[in-house]
Length: 185
Image 1 (cartoon, helix red, strand yellow):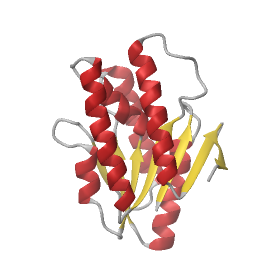
Image 2 (image 1 turned 45 degrees about the vertical axis):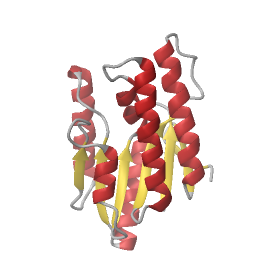
Image 3 (image 1 turned 90 degrees about the vertical axis):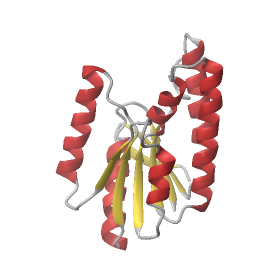
């Protein structure tokens, strides 16, 4: 089962997804795994990641496998494939930073777009045949301003397109605004 949580910055989407993860683990005896897609660059990002870790440790009363992607040695698809069993439930936190990583590689924007599209195709292919339950968190980009730079506009375009494709594959889609979860699908 694929379930998608979408919302703006600080909307409560991560907390809602984590709550569902805990409920599914307890009700279905699944083994939980948490895939963090953010890479620590700079003090602010490191601080945000640490707050997420502390929040998870406080919230989860159960053992959880955590995978922090570094993209050089461990990528999303490799981790997903290693967890692809009906005994597992995986939370991906989040597609927004995953897309951003690939669009900011040290290549031309066109090369990065090509790499991103290859990664996206691999992820979507995995999701169509996944044996494990997958909960995905992503940012909503359709309610904000149009980016000033080509990179900002491409990012919004690519994340918006990916969100639509993942939503189409998902059994449930939730919009989280101001901590309130609304069922879209």
